[in-house]
Image (tube, rainbow, N blue to C red; front, side, top):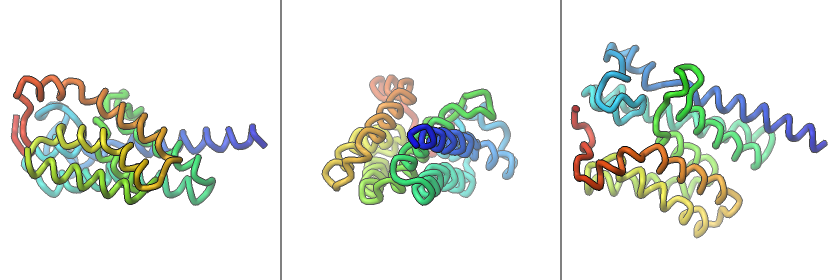
Length: 200
């Protein structure tokens, strides 16, 4: 039985990772003829960099789809196999976005996928994290700062809103968010981080 459960979790992880690996930013850039996203702005495949092309609809769709793949992975895994599988699926989808097999393991920074995953795992904490991102973004107009503050507060939201079972995966993903933003942190400290929508 334990072996069967491990096989289940392994299959869930593989499926979620492959879903997370779909580079929707590149798909939207191709769909809207925006050029190679990896040679634009920061070179990132996420919604913030898509927005640097000036195409708001493409950026919005990228945001929704990147968040959606994390949420869908969690919801399907939970419906089929329960909460532990849901957490594995969320983590695997996040890793797929950051290190996608389809484009040489060079992916995005995972913010939208993280928020979508958190919304599906613990929706009150997810809403609190999204609200935090939005408030910081409105005040400072810096996407990376918004992401970092939302990430660092997410484990707190999970704890105080009654979802202790998701604490470990939330802490791990939040730490990975910081790791993926190391260059942004340096620019934030030096005052050179670009603002939302700013073309570079």
